Length: 149
Image (tube, rainbow, N blue to C red; front, side):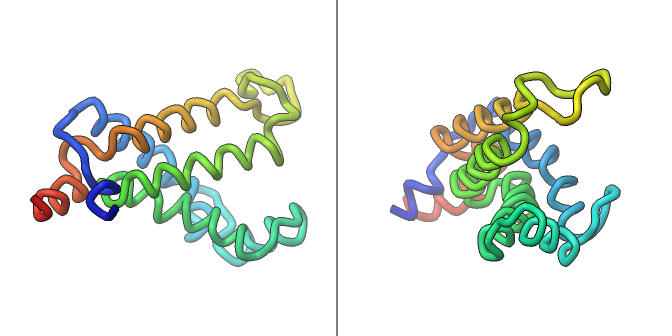
């Protein structure tokens, strides 16, 4: 089972998808955990998630950890399928709880009250590819899985 989670090939296109998804998610996670990039940091983000959005503490913490640690895991290709699954779940919940009511399109021109779901769908699609194919080239998953052969 462990070997199946890590198993991947040397596909460079999967590496590109993995790296881009991780790089895109890292600032979102760093906002929530570290307060970087205009974020509020861990305690304030947890307060918003639990008090204002009524997300149970454990799920709020999991979402925050997934965006931060999951992004780092994707960048280095470590437990890629697990990290991608976490990112996909966070995106599905974000659509359901927040962004679905704003339609499909992002708020490109500032003419709507919130952001639509197009970004979330792209992130989910990339995450699904990574769950199916694994980490691809230049990954710790590939290095570790080679030890099982």
